[in-house]
Image (cartoon, rainbow, N blue to C red):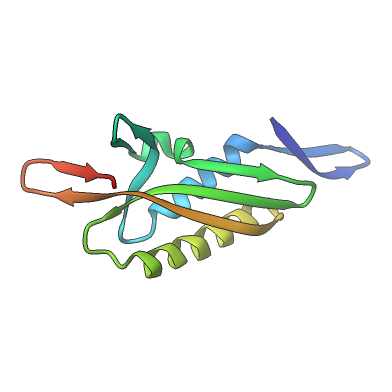
Amino acid sequence: MSNQIEKHDSGSIRIANEVVKIIAGLAATEIEGVAGMSGGVVDGITELLMKKNLSKGVKVELGEKQIAVDLFLVIEYGAKIPETAYLVQDNVKRAIESMTGMEVVEINVHIQGVEFKTDEFAEVKTY
């Protein structure tokens, strides 16, 4: 699905939902304390998605000139959740607005799990 944002004499500009999802996912994972995107909860275990699947932890709603975003994140153990979530919201809003020219009216951050790192592997816990 795509969204028309501007119409000119020479044609129109359309941005696919997937493009906005990737922008949001990249901007979210740039923030310290974000372990990755969450692809959902399967049998009580959160699927941690790394950089190649960033759009899977993002839901977008595109209007004519506005965008609403839902982000599903896994946070690193020890990160301050409210502070990290605020930084994610700010970075995602800035990235989407600067790249698309559209207004971001809402960014909802859903913390799906916590990543605990040990010397051998990373374990994700959900509650």
